[in-house]
Image 1 (tube, one colour):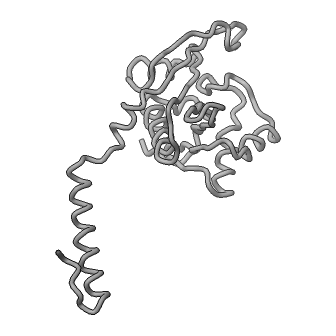
Image 2 (cartoon, helix red, strand yellow; image 1 turned 90 degrees about the vertical axis):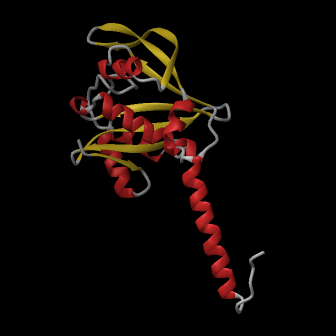
Image 3 (spheres, one colour; image 1 turned 180 degrees about the horizontal axis):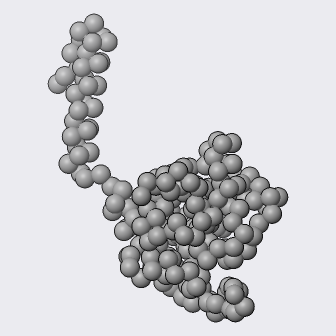
Length: 200
């Protein structure tokens, strides 16, 4: 599959996000099976406290991963929005959330990331049980209503070490880069200062 993950930065990206939030009914979205009016979607799109990554598969927008800070410093809450439930596989969930957490941890000091998962969402439950990126910390009874009945949700906390392990450079790679940078810096400074040597 050809996946794209687009951070929402421009007005064009915001139009894609609006499309991602437009599904009338979803078993994947972590906000529950609710639909949003155009005005409600625009409030989400324009909310400066929230950040989003639009998820596309084979050239089509299929949803978004969003996050927002809580009151406690370092605390963030993730959410998944689907505009095409059939497109969401465990692989797409994994790569989408990994991209979002990578952007979050690279740009903010992060202590805790939560994800609320409806237990009727088969693909999200499979993701939780088959991958080690989240730890289930509790059950919220009767949290969601769908298809005429109440369903529990599980509150999960990201295993940040597991996410960060995939993003880190190998120490050897970084040392090689730093050595190359040092060499270039010495060459450039030498040339810029009339041949004066900066080497020790």
